[in-house]
Length: 209
Image (cartoon, rainbow, N blue to C red; front, side):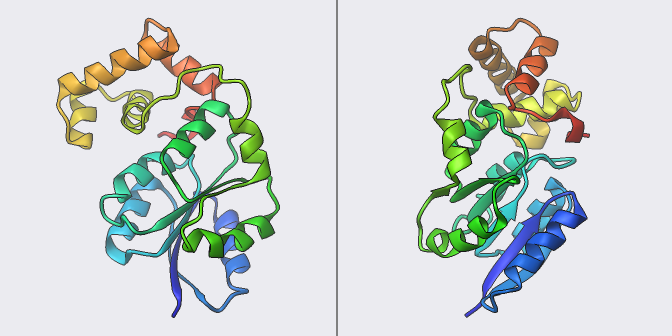
């Protein structure tokens, strides 16, 4: 029985590279490719794969936002994150989502392929380079998944009402998340909040529009 897989990355070259890698195993069936977070959520709802391999920094909706969203539609899907961002804050946040695998784009691609079977069996896999980042001294408080979603909205210039509508929560709850993030990161304005988030690898603003 084949394993249905979706690949998500905004770079066609990287999607093709992952497809070529997985094509070496006839058990794997690449049923869809997504170029951004919104496309990823739509494909996950429609195709319900067994495995998702996704980047984090993508346009419109990041991979991290999409992971939180797609868990509702495909709770049994195993997720492997492959990211080029190496900030401890971001890697820690990805780790806390409970995804099955985390790798850096600088890791040997063979590591990802050999990790798929253990991941499908229910094991959690982090590459050696990811574990090294996670073991670094913590220099910032980790944000929750919902706080990261709100942060992404702030980066896109959305106000509380727009963020609330998109996430299906109240504007007052959005404001509470914003306040909690400022407290955790010890900042006093949205500009400072975004600056700290970029510095610590919580956010890649180059791909949020």
